[in-house]
Length: 110
Image 1: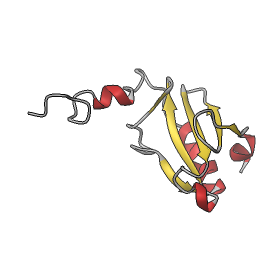
Image 2 (image 1 turned 180 degrees about the vertical axis):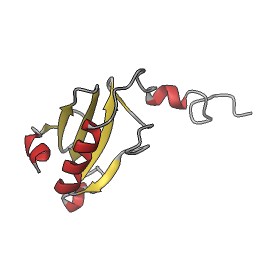
Image 3 (image 1 turned 120 degrees about the vertical axis):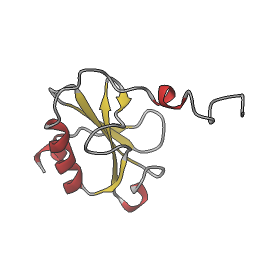
Image 4 (image 1 turned 60 degrees about the vertical axis):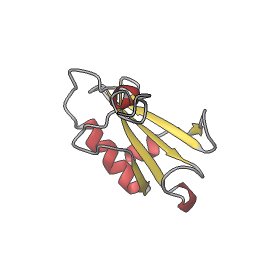
């Protein structure tokens, strides 16, 4: 629980709830949030995103999405996993870059 206890939660800037950020020497970071609109927040659980260069890293061995419904113990373990990731050579694509070719953002619906 050492890593979880080191998190410094603050009021989230964009939605009700709280957020803590933790940076790691390998260039990754973690965003841990809890609030009424997060996965598990209404049950007192946390949501975690693996981050790199300010973007969610959707392509790590840990997860390809955010991790919701996490206990404090699970968050602590995941923080250790992020710490142990090898350094990344290139930043991950932004969400907008991932979606730019999808039908979601295209005006021409072929």
